[in-house]
Image 1 (cartoon, rainbow, N blue to C red):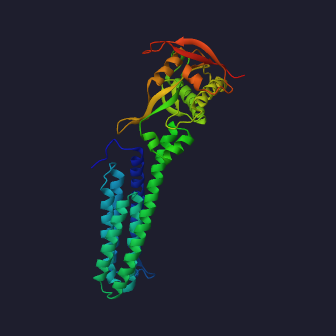
Image 2 (cartoon, rainbow, N blue to C red):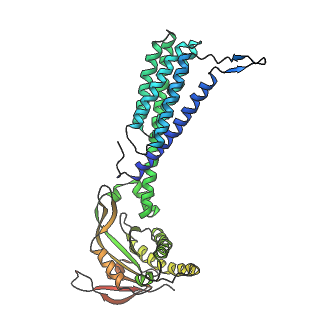
Image 3 (cartoon, rainbow, N blue to C red):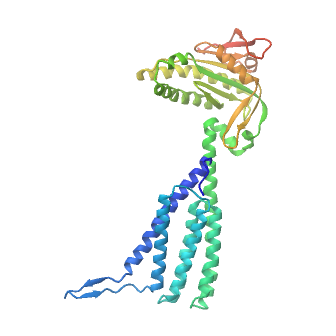
Length: 415
């Protein structure tokens, strides 16, 4: 059974870590019994007189030696399979848990023949407890529960059938309590790791589109972004002037490098003013204020962001001149009005989007703006507090689907 090609980034990372952990554990459980087998093997070595004599091995019964050999062989096979087989089966972790508990049961039975029966009774307890902890490395709560349940079943069953009666009763009671405790702690640790990993992936995704302030709000109340709601927004479109002609004189690699150097600066400005990045459209950037979180000064923030973006382009050109890149200029359009905001798409691909006439108007205004110019709609000008910004009437902009041209104003650069 192979994994579906359509899995989330979180699940893909979890599977990769699970496989890596199983390889490490299998390698350790291959080396450890191998060292025991070497230490307990009878070696024929010559004495000083040249006669071959047999060294004295540790007092390990043949049954325990065979159990160690079984553990070694099983994990060599598992390690080889993990390296050769690149697919993934959700049932693999459960099969490994069952295999290890079976091998530990075999080891527990083999310890009946130990020269020290009580030592043979207590030794497997640590193995079962360790197997429960190791099951947690699969990042699966159900695998931990399965390991704990099998430990509580296998060890008492095997030990109560052994030759250490009635000591095996006491050992089984203590062992069962220990297994329950280890299972509980391991389950809690795995749950904490899964929660932290899921939150980390979620925050990473949110940080791509939302400012840190808004991302923290959404993390605390996910319904802010999930539900599609009607709201009043201020939409900003920013475009590089003459980009098509400029890119025709550059190699595709140079165009990509230019955009990768340009966009992070613009996005940082959007986030710094509390905006939401909706998308990149070629060389254009679409940002929104008022969704998913609305604030009284959203219009002021959007206009301030546009002004700072125009200023940042000047600094960007000065720094990029050393790389031989041509200077760029941007034109910006801003509109305010009603819209619907939320996640749209499919189960496999979703995108946060703001849908409505306001977005279309902002795009039309941006297209009408000239180099190094920022134009805003009349609704944006009326919503703005006017602090530190001067608006100048500009020619009206014809917009598709509008009975009358859209009244716009030019934002004069700050002195």
